[in-house]
Length: 499
Image (tube, rainbow, N blue to C red; front, side, top):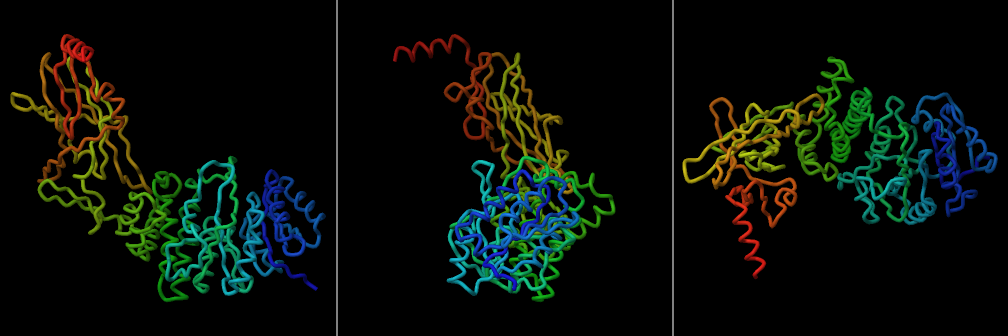
C-alpha cells in the first residue's frame, strides 16, 4: 500500500554537493514533523560530483520518506516531471537543491490549508540569503496575508514554482515544459492559474533563495545565450498567450502582466547581434512585436514592478513597431512613439560636472541626455556682459559620451560637452545656456536648466568657487563670474575678522 503524505517535496539535483546537505536538512527539520508528514523525492539529473552519494546517504537514514531517482542529464524540467510520477503527497513543492525552506514553512502552509480548503495554490516570500540587505523585487505582494483572484487583481505576478505549494488534484497531466530552461516555472504556474483563478500569499514563513558566487548560479551571462532571446519568446511568452487564447478567448491581464514583467529584462541587451544571426535577429524582433501586440498599453505604463520609466518607454516603442517621431511647436520639442510622449526635451537638465580656470579661460564641462542624436543638438553658452553678448558652442567629448543600446537599437544618449570661454582680466559677466534642436527647417531654442552633479565639490567655499582672481557662483540657471583680486579678498577677510 502506497503511503500518503501531507507534502511531497520534489528536488531536482545536479552538481550541488556543496549545498545539498543544507537544503535537505531544511526539509528534514521541518516543525511539522518530517517522518509523519513529508515525502522527499531527490532526482539526480546525471550529477558528476558527489550529489548522488549524498542523496543515497539521506535515503538510508529515512527510507520510508526519501526516494532517490537517477537519470541522464536533461535538465531541471525533466527531473521534476519524473519526480511528479512518484509523488504521493497532498501538496507538492519544487524546492531547488541549493535553496532552503524556513523550518516552519510546511507547518504554516498546513495550518492555512486547514482553514482554506478551497485554495489550491499558495506562495511564500522568496528571501535571499548569502547577500546583505536585498529583497526579491516581487515581494511587495507579501505585505499582508491575502488570497488574490488574479482576474480581478492582475498585478500580483508569480513566476517561481519553487516558492509555491500546489494541491495534487490540480496538477493532473500538467508538467514542466522541457523545451525551455528559462521561464518554465512561470508557464507552469500561470497555466494553472488560468483555471484556478485564486492564489494565496502567506507572509509568516519564507523560501530561502541562495545567492551563489559561482557561475553556475549567476544570471550575469544569460544575455549571451541564444535561448534567452529565442526560446523565452516562443516557449514562455508566446506559449502563455496561446494557452490563454485557447482557454479564455482572450489574453488575461494577469498573463499580460507576467509577460511584461519578464520582457523588461531585454532592456539594455546591446550584445544581441553578436549572439543571433541576421535572420534570427529579424525573426526575434518580429516575434517580440507580435507578443507586445497582446500587451495593453496600460499594463506597461502602470506596471509597478517595472521600476524604471525608460524601460516602459522602450517597451512601448517596440510595441509601436519602433515608430519614433518628433513634434516641434515653436520652442517646444516633444519626442513620441505614436501618440505617447517619450520625452519633452524642454524638461531635460544640463548637468554641470566641472568648472575650472586655466590661464584666462573659463573651462566648463557637463553632460546632457536625450533620445536625439547629437547631430540634431547644439549646446550653447551665452556670455552676458555690458557690451553685446557673445555665443559659444560646446564641443562634444566623444570619449566620455555614451549611449544605451537596447536589442541592437541606439536608444538613449548621454552627451558630454566642454566649453572654453576666454575672459578679460577684470571682466565680469554671467553665463546662460541654450540647447538648440536643429532639423530640416526647425531651429528650436530650449532654455538650459542647470543642475550640478556634485555642487559641494564644485563650489567649495560658501557656495563660491575662487579661481585665478575670479569668484564663480550659481543662481538659478545662471553662472556668475566676478572679478575677485587678492586685495578684495583680503579686505573682506579682515572685515569678517573685525565683526
